[in-house]
Image (cartoon, rainbow, N blue to C red):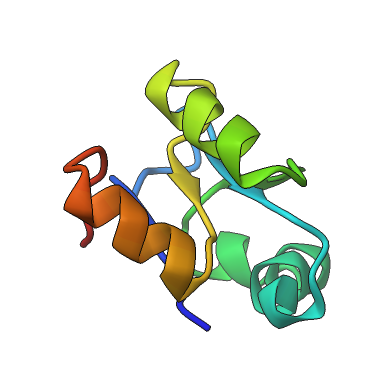
Length: 89
């Protein structure tokens, strides 16, 4: 599994939240648990986890700037990188 975050920079709580798109796959639980346990505010980062089940829909939301990051597995990440649609940080 690869957890790929795109264009995520540390943002102050005073700004808009970083919107992170991901599916409900159990492997992506850490960001959801971090949100529920309040770990993001402890680090002064405002993150909003948004469930988007379809990888194609996550990529479209990212391209449309509706989300600033997404979680995906290595197969989709590899395909995106080959087509130079995404930048990995």
